[in-house]
Length: 260
Image (cartoon, rainbow, N blue to C red; front, side, top):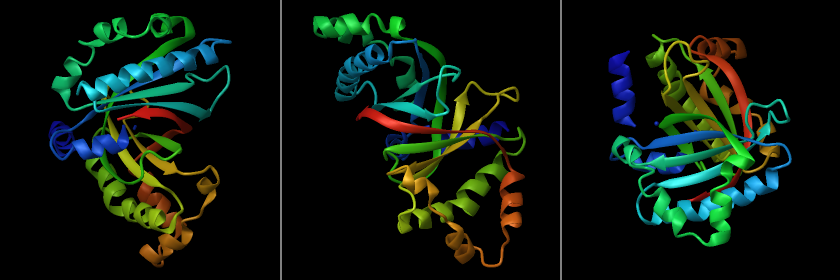
C-alpha cells in the first residue's frame, strides 16, 4: 500500500481539475477542497462574500501563491438536511506551497476595499466550514471546467488500489474518451483523496463526469460500450467495475465562479 501511495503521489491527482493535470507534468498539484454549509437566510450574503474572496484569490493567482480557485454549488442533494451547499477548490503547486498557502492572507485582506473587508471578515456569519480535504488528480480527459459536474465518491478496498486504478484508467477511460468525442459529455477525471485517509473513511477516491448541460447527463453510451467491448454483456461490465469499488454517493454540482 505504501508503494502504491508513493506511486500515485509521484505520477500525478475533485476536482481545480484542469490546473491539476497541467501541473502534474512537473510535480503533483494539490486541491484543497472545503465544504460550506450556508446559514439559514444568508445565501445572498454568502455569495457576496465569496465574490469578494474571488478578487482576493485572483491576486493570489497573479502573485503565484496558488494555481487556481473555484466555487461550486451543490444541486443534488440539496435542502436543509444536506451536509453542505457549496464547495471551494483551491489548487496549489505542491506540498511546499501548501505549507505557506495562507502566509499572505492577512496582507491581501488588509489591502482590500473597506466594503470587501467587511464581507471577508464576517464569513463565519454567513456559512460554516463543514470539512476540509486534500485531493490530487490521477487521470482525466476533456473539458474539466464545464458548467456541470457529477462526482461519484468511491469506497476502495484498502488492498485493492492497483485493481481499481487499472479499471478506471485502462478499462473505462476509453469509453469516456469516445463519449467526449461523440459529444455526450464534456470531460472526465479520476481523483484520490490524500488527507484524511484510512480504512475508516467512507470514500477514498472519486470520478467526476463533466457536462455542458443537464440534458447531456441523460445521453447513452451503450453503443460506445458495444463498439469498444463487442459481446460483453451489461452484467459482465458491471461485475468488472463493481468488484473494484463501491459507489458511496453521487453528487451533482454547478460551477459558479473560478480564477486561474
